Image (cartoon, rainbow, N blue to C red):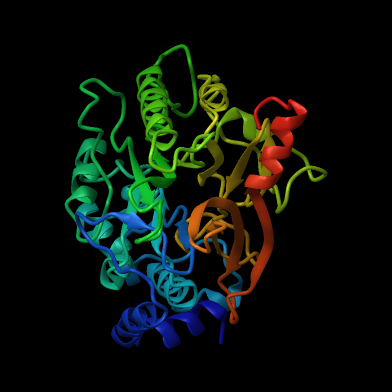
Length: 394
C-alpha cells in the first residue's frame, strides 16, 4: 500500500476520533485553547508554538487527485491526504496557533471556492485552536474574488484573521494585520505583547503592464507595518517592565522576497530545489524590516520545493516547504510543515519574562512524522552580543 493510501485509510476514516483526541490532548498538556475574540498568550510552560501550513492547494476533496507522488501512492490519493496531514500535525505538535501562508485553495480547479476553503481549514476549525491565514496567488482564481476569499476566511470559526487593519483607511491588498502574543498570565509581561506577529498580502500578479511576474508588498502596506512596529515598540519599552529593545517579531506572507536568492547551500539550513519565484522588482520591504529592527524571522510558501532558512542582516528568511497533495512537488520528497517555538526566559524572581529564543524544525508526512532541521533562529543572548560589537541589523 502506498503512503498516500495509508494516510487516508488510517487518518481520514477516523477523523472524528482524531479531532476529539486533539481537544483532549491539548487540554491535557495545559495548552490554552483560544477562540474568537480571545488573546493569544504564552502558556504556563513559557512557550508559544506555531504550526505553519503552506500551499495546501485544496480543491474538491476526494474528487481531486494528487500531483507528483510515487506511482504506488497514486491510488486513492486526493485532497483528503492534505486533510489527514493537517490532522496528524495538530495531534503531534499540539500548537498554540496555526498559520496558513497562502494558496490555501487551488481555486482554478475548485467547483466552489467557499466550499473548498471550508474543507481546507476544517481540521484547524475542529481543533478549536486559534488560526490565521494570508492569501497566495491562486486563492482568488475561482468563484470568489480576492476580496471575497478574505471575507470568507474572516467569517470562519476560531480564526484570528483580519480583513485589513481598522486604522488603515487606504491599504493595498486584503489580509494585512498584526496579532500580539501576551506574556504568561500572572507574570509581569501579562499585559505586554512579548511576541508580535505580522501578516501581509504579498499579492498575486503584477498589475503594472511594464512589469511581468508576481505581485509584491506595496508602499501602503510598508507604511502600515512601520507605524504598527513603532507603536508596539513604544508600548513594550514603556512601564511597567520597560524593556531596552523591541519585542521580537515574526512576519508571514506568501511570495518570497528577492532577498531569498541571497543564499546557497553553504549558508542555509534545508534544501533549495528550485528558483526563487519572487516579484521581478524589489519593493524594499526587506530594508523596511531591517530598519524597524523587530522582525527576527520571515516565513513564506510559494516555492514548494524549497524549505530552507537563511539569515541575512539579522533576519531569518524561511520557506515552509510544500504541504498540499494537489500542489506540485517532487515524487519521493515528502510533503512537510514547519513548526516555530518562541520560549521565554526566567527572571531572577523565578517568573517568566521576555522571549529568550525562537526555534524551528520541520516535520515530514511520512509514517513517523519525522522531525528534521532543528535550529535556533534567534536568541536574545546572541542578539545582545551583536549589539555590543556594533553589528548592524542585530
